[in-house]
Length: 166
Image (cartoon, rainbow, N blue to C red; front, top):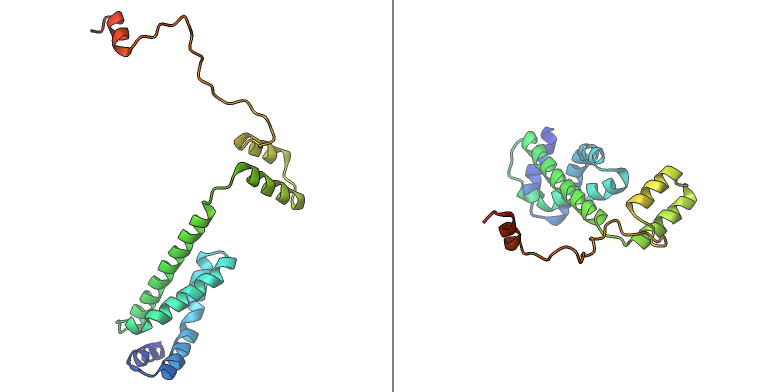
C-alpha cells in the first residue's frame, strides 16, 4: 500500500503528460479490483461496467486534486467518488424508469412479451383490473349523481338557517 501512496504523490508532482499516464495506469491497476467489487456489489451487471468506467474516469480527472497523505484517506476519497457516481447512476435509472407510457402501448408490450413467456390467467386478471385494456369497453367506476328535481338548491347559509344554526 505504500507503493500506492508513492505513485499518487509522484502523480501529483509530475508535470509531463506521458509520465502522468504511466503513473495513472499503475495506480488504476492497484485500485481497479477493489472498486470493481464495490461497484458490482451495488449495481446489476449490465449497468455495472458503465458505472465502473464512470467511477474510474472521475478518479482519473480529479486525481491531481487529491490532498490526502495516507492510504486510508486515498481509499476514502476513491470510495466517496464511487458512491457519488453510483448515486448518479441510480438517479438516472429512476428517471428512465419513470417515463409514462400510454395504456395501449403498454398493452402491446405486455402482449409481445406474453408470446415469449405466457402470462398466467391470474396475473392477466390483475393487470386487466389495474389497467383496463383499451379495446375493452368498461363502465366508469364513479359517476356523480344526477341532480334531482325534488331537492331544493339551497346555499350553505340558507341550509344552516333552516336547521337553526344561525
